[in-house]
Image 1 (cartoon, chains in turn red, yellow, blue, brown):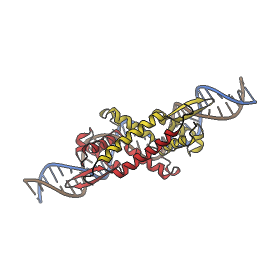
Image 2 (cartoon, rainbow over the protein chains, first blue to last red; image 1 turned 180 degrees about the horizontal axis):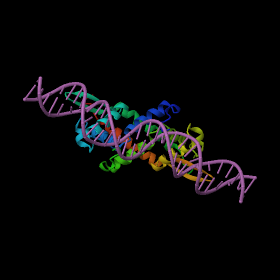
Image 3 (cartoon, protein in one colour; image 1 turned 90 degrees about the vertical axis):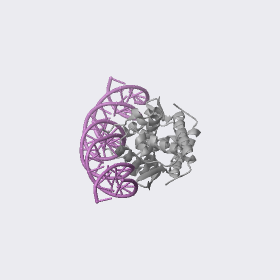
Image 4 (cartoon, each protein chain N blue to C red; image 1 turned 180 degrees about the vertical axis):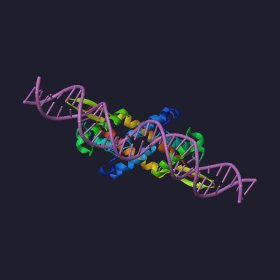
Length: 110
Length: 110
DNA sequence: CATATTTATCGTAATATTGCGATTAAGTAA
DNA sequence: TTACTTAATCGCAATATTACGATAAATATG
C-alpha cells in the first residue's frame, strides 16, 4: 500500500512523529537555525540564505507552520516568521523525556 | 526534481535530519517506546506488539539501525534489539541545545 | 492607475517512503 | 537429514516528498 497506518498508533505518537517529520529535513533545520540566529523575525531573507527556489522555501515554511513550529505575521508587503517557542519547547521536552527513560536502562545485551 | 539537495547543507544539518527522520514515524516511535519499556532486549516480540507485518517491522528496524538509534545482536535463532544509548543521547542533546537558543529569543514579532 | 515587490499556490517530474506477500538465509529441533 | 522458527530481503503497488517554473494574490511605490 504505502500509507502510514496512523489509526493504529496513539495520538501522542502521531503528534510527535508529525513534529519530528517537520524538522527532519536539512533545509528546515537550516531555516530554524537561521530564525534562531536572527533573533528578530525574518521573511524573504531565508530565500536569499538558502540554495533553494522561492517556491521550495515557501513550501518548507508551510510545513514548519503546519507542524506548529513556526508562526508568520504580515508585516507590510512581506511576511515575518519566527519560531513558536511554546511548541518547540514541547517537542524538546518530549525528546528529553524519552531520553530520561533511555538513560535509565542498564544495558543488558548488545 | 525531487531529490534532497544534501550537498548544500552542512554535515551536521544532514546528520541531524537523518536521525530525526528515522524517529519521525509513529511505528518507529512505538518501537523505541517498546524497547524502553522492556528495558531488557527484545526481537520478534515487536512484530506481535505492532499492527504491522513482519516484513514492515523489519524494515522499520533497519531504518532505526541505519540511523544508529538501535543495535541488534544475534541471540540463538533470533535477534535481540536495544536502544543505542549513546546515539540517542546525542540526538536528545542536539534538540535540547537548539531549544536553549530558542528560549533565549525575546519575542519581537508574531 | 500602472508597476514593482513579496509570498503563496498550482502543476508537474523525479525520487523516496510505506506496506506487504513471497522468498531467502540461518539457526534450532526432531 | 528434514522440518520448524526467526528475521532479512526482494519485488511490487500505493502514496508522499522534494524541487522548481509559472502563475496568482496582495501590498507597496511611482
